[in-house]
Length: 116
Image (cartoon, rainbow, N blue to C red):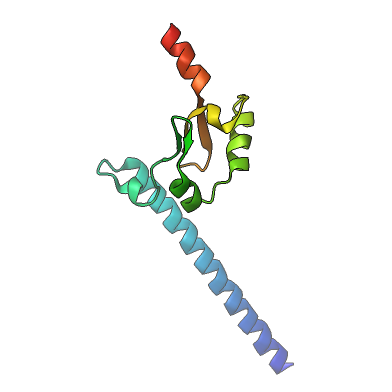
């Protein structure tokens, strides 16, 4: 009985330690988010990268695609979800945004703007 009580007390201590660690991590995350949001000197850039250009003038940027682990299927999916049709060569610009989303600007959109 004494041994089981000691084991139980040890389990409670471990659970409390795990809870403390989680609470500390959550608070640190919130603190960094607040500092990042309110800082004027680019503190947020230390934690979040800028957008990455994946496609420029219809040409894939192989270094960026490899570095960011983006596939051609990911680009096609981004085209479909943004309501665009066509081939990868029809992409004027594509960026991997800080949020993790891929934004696509199609060549046809640029051409329409130039016509107007």
